[in-house]
Amino acid sequence: MTDDAERFGDPRIPDETITSKSHLFQLGALPPATYDGGAQQQAHEQNFPILTGQQASIQLITLQPGGIREPHWHPSAWEINLVTKGVASWVLIDGNGNHESFEASPSR
Image 1 (cartoon, helix red, strand yellow):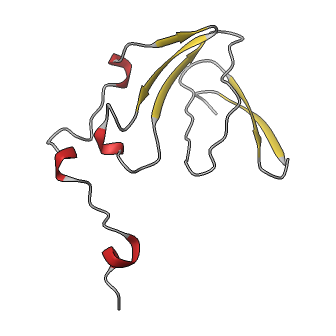
Image 2 (cartoon, rainbow, N blue to C red; image 1 turned 90 degrees about the horizontal axis):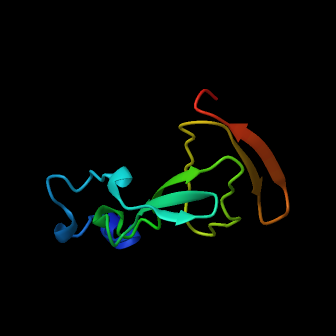
């Protein structure tokens, strides 16, 4: 049987990214980038090295009433959205044009 590291690549995070607190990040402490309708704070490979190679970022997005997040897509990354206050409406569209819309709030 082939060694997993040979089959799938070495899953270990490089030693230079590991510290005793490498899994902790104070997202809310970042200075926000402000836009019409809201603000964004983002953790990514450059400021949170444990994300290196994960094809992901973590964002804290604060929308003002009526604010929207730009339409976007992720051909090779994942996304998790949590609503901590208020109500958010989503429309998800796949590559075939199928769509689903829903609302989310902290209680749903």
